[in-house]
Image (cartoon, rainbow, N blue to C red; front, top):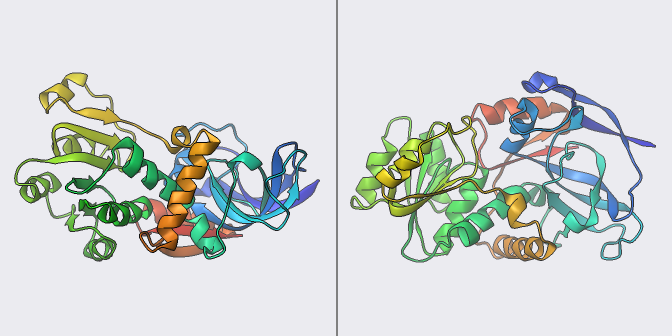
Length: 325
């Protein structure tokens, strides 16, 4: 059995539990392919798995997103060839030099999209796609609120929503992040460390509120986000970087305007192969035509993944961050 360097977690906890060691890489079984990673995406979901917020049975290799080259085909794989450049998301085990992946979860990378961009866009870009096109269909005349607007998903949401004709309000943690968000389509960046974002949203919308809030922050923003919504508005809680949202009384939704709340996840939106293909093609088109620019803010060697996690949790990263095996 072949060996590869990987980041292994034997017990959940802080960044210190991440071990850079040799792991076994099996031969691809039927329906699988062996890929050699060129780049691996860093995402907050990796932190959730590392800390145990999302369950995984130790020992496990971290990471759910990567881009690389097909090195070997398992039995029955006919739509891929050795040498194809491919990308994926949603498959735990990405923090590694090599791994096997189900062929049906891989998409081919267009020639004019580089590996780092592909690795940094799959989870975040496909998430932005379903949020804007499926969870709530954003269109001309909408004014939306995006939390963490300078983050990986946030920057994509701002650009794509702007292209769709929306006015974008976004919360950020500093003036530098406000500038970055504005450069990527955010019309009204709000520095939440010194401004009350609820008051600013009401001011910007003439007191009406917004039809949808996209919130990846969680505990720290959830309740105030409800106050930003207009009656019958939709609260989209798709992450919890500040911690899990505590239980709330459903009566609050009634009192604040018969609000809707959803807690979506990408896996359900791309569970069918046809849906994955459609979403990936629309994402690649948006990137290739310049509608969306994937901001790879920083890269780290795979062996320094623990430092990358520390920087991510300390809000020292912007856009997409990529690990290089």
